[in-house]
Length: 188
Length: 280
Image (cartoon, rainbow over all chains, first blue to last red; front, side):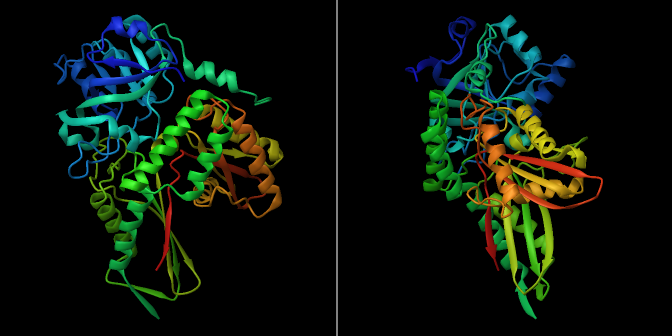
């Protein structure tokens, strides 16, 4: 694997447009955790013309619902959840200024189209590497919807958070390319 | 008649919930290491390195190796000569789940009602509990917490007898190819063949409580397990980002079925194949 590229937040469109699939990235700064229930609430708020509890401009969203922190720890285990469940809400959220998404798994065509339009990069963290990923999180602060428990919107302060670019802002897809490369299956 | 205090059941369940979340079973850990040795994709190797290191950190530090500590599936075998005192069996198990998930800092991932309100129960109860009455005066409890990244990609196909072995292979591969990299591979694939729709699904869950190194005792099914594993590892799905280690094992369980039917259920499990068992 190539040497990692270090990224410091805020994450601008200019930074996003420089990345390409397969880039090995270490993120330092602040990222915002949100998943199913929070996405639903935020999109409902936008539909009603309400203001969101977070300014998403030049932010990175992390699809995450962590385990509770043990005493003395900033956060519990905190690996990515399946991004595809957020697809229905994502184009609306990208219009709010998000430039990076961190999760795992495939995205819909609508999401990729919106990424290309808005200059957004999609990163994968390793699914199920939750205790390892926790080592790169220094602080966890709930920003909104505390009643959602693990699904609350929260700010994570991270240092060298490891991930890899899987869909870039040109719409190139590492999953598709690598699967094709290693596929030998016949007849199914 | 032997008596067993419900409190002992609660304590055992609480302890097992924590163990299952913190300690990846040895067979799965060794399976990941073997996968790392044979994986052809460099990025796949890097992913496997992270997954193996993650399991080591979780075990050493008593931390959940995945943040999705699952919905708690519980298989209970109750000896018919055992008398449980001091409370109901299901209450004792659910109290144990609540205790284990709270004391163990595990994530509470259960909502009370699925469609309209979806309010979190805040203690991960209720579990999905299957009780079987067996011979003897012992109580065997198996905890298999199930994450939903992989559960969402599972499925059932109602085949007919004429579909045969090829039909079963096609049904399984359809489900696997549709799941692709989403269920956190390397997967462990539990398959239930036969019974009714619900029984096939249950068999596919039971299959996941078996070691990944143990093949079905009936040679025809053992051969089918091996053939399906080979096919799944040829898909290119690999350890999430493409490669040759898509699954660690295929475990099949089967049961009697109707003359008109051939139900096939596939439960996909991620690499966090958790389970813990105890006899009281």
